[in-house]
Every structure is written in C-alpha cells, then in structure tokens.
Length: 309
Length: 253
Ligand SMILES: Nc1ncnc2c1ncn2[C@@H]1O[C@H](COP(=O)(O)OP(=O)(O)OP(=O)(O)O)[C@@H](O)[C@H]1O
Ligand SMILES: [Mg+2]
Image: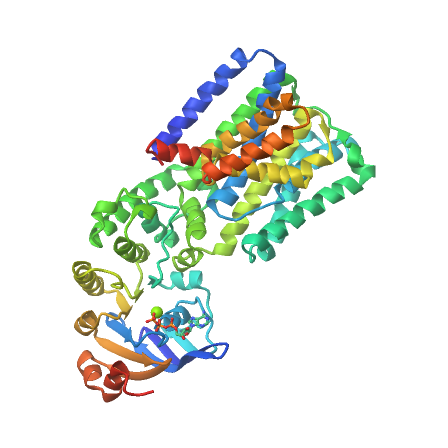
C-alpha cells in the first residue's frame, strides 16, 4: 500500500518538473504556485482533521500569524525575513500549544465553535491593529531574501514551493506510517482504545495541532513574501472554511487528496470567472454535488472505485 | 502479595450504584473470571480497574501500588491491557495496523524521527509488522492479515482486539466478553487461546457469559449481582453456592 503511495510522489515530481515548460505564461505559473502553497497548508490541516479526527475552523488564523509576522517584523522592525518567519512560526506554535489543552477537551460541534472563535479573534486583531498591519487595507511585504540570496520571479518561486510540497508530502507519508502517526490515527478511530494501549491522547492532539499550526504559519510567511502584499483576508473565516473545504473535497485522511483538493478549489474560481456574478452560486453547487455523490472526497472515492485503498 | 487487589470499591452513576463495596484479589498467573447477570456491574468494574472511570470509593492496587483514578495510558505502562465488550477497533486502519498500535509503548514514538523515517524507525516497524502478523495467526486471523478493519466480520474483530492487547506484551489482560457473538467453533478457539495466553504467564481477568467456558478455564470466579459481590471461589465452589444459584435462576428480588 505505501509502496504505491511513494510511487505517487515520483509521478507528482515528474509533473511538477514538466509543468513550467508547458504552461503558456506567468498567469498560469502564478496559479500553480498558489495551488502548491494551498496544497501545503491543506496537507498540514488534513493531518489534524483527516488523520487525527480533530476539526479546526480557525486555521487561517495561523496562516495570518505567519503572513503578518513576516510583513510587520520585516517592515517595521527591520528583521531578516528568515527571523520573522521563524518568529511567526514560534508564535503560532506557542498559541496552538496554549489553547490545545482546553480546546481538545471539546469534541464535535463544540470543538468546531472553539477553533472558529480562535480564528476570528486573530483576524479581528489583524484588522484592528491598523498602525502596525495597515488594517483592512493590508500592507506590502519585502521580497524573501535568505542570507544573500533573493527569491524573485514566478519561476524561482515555483521551484521553491514545489520543493516544499514534495518534501512535506514525503514527510507526511512517512509520519502516518510511523508509530506517532499510527497512534494519531488510532485516537481518531477509538479514543478509548488508543488510551488503553498507552497513547497519551491529549499530548498527541496537542502535538499535531501545534505541527499543523506551525506549518500553516510558515506557509503564510511564504505567501506574504511571494505575493508581496498581505490583507486581513488571509486570516479570516472564509479562508479557514476554504481550507477545510479543500480537505473535505480532496478526501479526509488522504495525503494526495490534500493536493487534489487544493488544486481543484484554487482553480475552480478562475474557471468559473465566465459566469459573471454567479460564480459563487455555481461554486457552491459544485461543492454540494461533490459532497452528495462523493462524501468521502475525491481521492478515496476514486481509489475505492479502482480497487485500491 | 496479590498482583491485583481491589478493596471496598464503589461506583455510583447518579442514582445507580453500579459497583458497591466490592473487594477481591487476583494472584499472578491465574485466570480470574467475573460473572453475573446483565447489568451486574462487570464492565463497570473493568472500567474502574483500567482507569476509564474514577472510583467513587475504594482502593485498587497493582503490585501494591495504588492505581485508583490513574489515567488509562499510564496504566498501560504498568502492564495492563484490555479488550472491550462493545468493540473498540479503529475502523480507519488496517487489521495489522490495529495490532501494531498495541505495541505503542514499546516503540520510539518521536514525531520527527517518524516523519524522516530514520533507519531505526523503519527497521523496528518492519519487525513489528512481522510480529503483528504472527499475533494475528495466533488468534486465528491469518485470513485477515492484509484486510482493512472495516472489511472484517464481528467475530474476527473481537479476536483482533485480543491480538492488539497481546501486542502490548501485558502482565495482566482484561477480556470483557471475548466470546459474545461468536459461533461455537470460534468460542472454542477463543477458549484455547485464553489458555495459551495464561500458560505463557499472563494473568487473565475474564468477563464472560458462556458458562461452559468460564467453568472450564477459571482458577477463581467472582460473582457479582446488582453491583455487589455475591460469591467468590473455584468453579466447583461457585456452582454449589445457593446465593449464586438463586441469582441465576432469578428466585430472589
Ligand atoms: N456510564 C454509565 N452511566 C450511567 N450508568 C451506567 C454507566 N455504565 C454502566 N451504568 C449502569 O451500571 C450498571 C452496571 O452496568 P455494567 O455495564 O457494568 O453491567 P455488566 O455487568 O457489564 O452487564 P452486561 O452483562 O450486560 O455487559 C447498569 O445498571 C448500567 O446501566
Ligand atoms: Mg458488560
């Protein structure tokens, strides 16, 4: 089973290498980069939602922390981009660790509400601290310079983000098939069964929440530097929902589903641009039909259809 | 000193006294059975001892150490393992992975080592895979070694739980109705499996309604009724006990 999963990694790597040479122009390359960034965030979120079975409706808050840490610290305090990025990741991780204990005592709808609240608080802070963040208008972000090397232009960004995604996919595939990952999936399957074999359930929920928050924050920083501008939308409720939708459409507890979900839902609004004002309605309808006919998500449904798990 | 000592244990749910003032001791290496009519408090007793519930009153000692109210994942460290009357199989995993989870505490569970698949982790996991397959053969599940848990029938899942519990290499194993819902062939397989486990030195505490199995296999039997201890002794002693006969034939109330 896991052999074939690593085979997928090679296929994806080949696609990623060929893609820039067949894409007609930078508009598509930009779209591809945004797909890949989303795929990374969604992958981290899927570890939490799909594998550990813990919902987070406030994950964009962590993306926002990274994006604004990079923007604010480099602009107002002249931090190096790398330092700002790590500071954001640390802040996201500490915040996630602090709220994890109380929040994961909750289950189901209550957990959803609590994480929703967390995300909303972060987005309100970003919106209100206008002196630092530019408020609703957002603020510009300097280019990403690592030591003396500056990443610029779609081509370079594309390779960087592709590398991050491939590495994250590889690490995630390893993780879910490791003792840590099996414990995580076990507590999803039966919390009490996991406990009696020795899994400290609270500790594992905390660990995966912190991991996915830190990863979301890092990718938030990457987004900020790539786009060169941040607005509070990056941290808001709709972005959180969008991320969860990508997890669900691609397939819960499906590593490659995370990629497919992110790719489709990033591309769909572009593809629907012709519907003039009705995009949202068509978008919503497509999601509804997906859920009605493929409640398990695209990748698991197709995998089952073709006799593989 | 007995391996497990329970004294004056009680659990009250709202108005229901599920376990009342129960005391008993389990010597290491024996098969100790707990029987009693439906609702007698057998599962509640298991849940108290394995840390799922906190006792309302009383002490539980394992090797003389007070373990009342200690969390289940801590108790696992002391060599406790169990199965559940209502199945607790992880349906999001394969059968083999379910068994592998049982070995949780014996593995290096570091997140980063796992994510990078360091050679040590990969090697240990390969060994564990073989070990888990061996356990599945032991419990009679060789046909399901490559199966996903959600594709297995009820009787197989019950035995999968036993394999998972054994993967922990426990010192004391709690089995809550391992033969419930099994056909006679499967029941006799579980019967001989429990013997094999007990012979390997694991202390077995068993809740079971199948009287033939209980009478055959048990060194000691505890009888509960309405949460109270009704009798304790060997199979022969319990069978002769007038209170037990009355409770099972329903002449009191
Ligand atoms: N979590 C709970 N909350 C409230 N009441 C409970 C709870 N668990 C058990 N009870 C009650 O405690 C009593 C004993 O239940 P328990 O499940 O321990 O019986 P049992 O001997 O295992 O029965 P069975 O043979 O049917 O499995 C019953 O009256 C039951 O309704
Ligand atoms: Mg019971």
